[in-house]
Image (cartoon, rainbow, N blue to C red; front, side, top):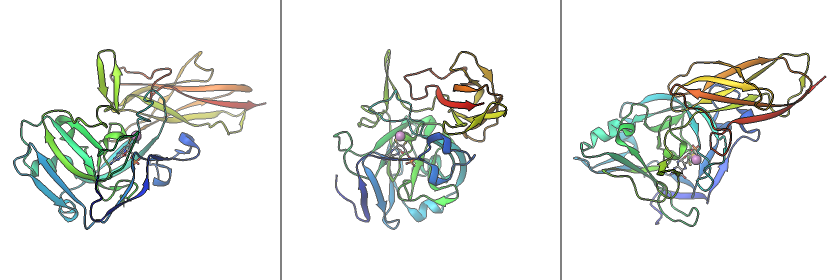
Length: 329
Ligand SMILES: Nc1nc2c(c(=O)[nH]1)N[C@H]1C(S)=C(S)[C@@H](COP(=O)(O)O)O[C@H]1N2
Ligand SMILES: [Mo]
């Protein structure tokens, strides 16, 4: 892939950054950017905003090129959403718990597709990042796809801001796609082209990676399945037997969470936690008050969404989370 004018890669290769304390760092409703994980497959791209543009082509009546000022002149909206990485595409059943909750702001993708006069024949929308490089010995553009229903949904944005600030280069600025409710892999950073099509995209990032094996074939890694984590206590906390303690955390998924259960005995018995509301596709807070007995304890949490879907015990990216704590006399 050729370098384009006004763009350069600042760090080559796969990279992950996240808070040292993992999910135990995520104590606030809105995750500050310093505590929000960062992921890239091929490296970070730095784009001169003057040179950034977005091409919209394929099954459209009016192929369109938008510059940053064109996008900035269009109507924008804010949307609160959890943001979660699906984990390594090379190990899709390993739970990584790279998660946060943020407010995105940008232009609805639907407005850009309307402006380009998307055809009624289009059933998918492909988006590509502008960066170049290698991942898992493959050298091709970071291209993802969305079925048309999701592409036109009100929450899907060409984002310019996160938590009230312009996107940094590492975050995918000046413009990235965000697909609230779906795994982070779908939210293409450094977006440079949008293509309307009547089939799925055929590149590595939609076929070889982020396409889970199932009994009958494969399933794209799209909507986020129910998941929950215990934020507090953390393994390092000092707990005392005579002190009632709050076990609390976050639960989320594309579909709203309806219940969370907590176990304080490694899954032998479960108690129902109280669950807070959600806004947009935010995460939801759960809590349970516990009067601990002295000794070691394995705390677990598991949730269920409104469709009745639950978390697997193990071997899944949304497997049940556990925390080991020690309670003193
Ligand atoms: N262009 C591009 N977009 C990308 C990626 C990438 O490597 N290149 N990584 C994806 C993955 S796997 C995730 S989890 C999110 C991470 O977004 P963040 O770094 O803002 O948290 O970006 C997604 N968008
Ligand atoms: Mo990811």
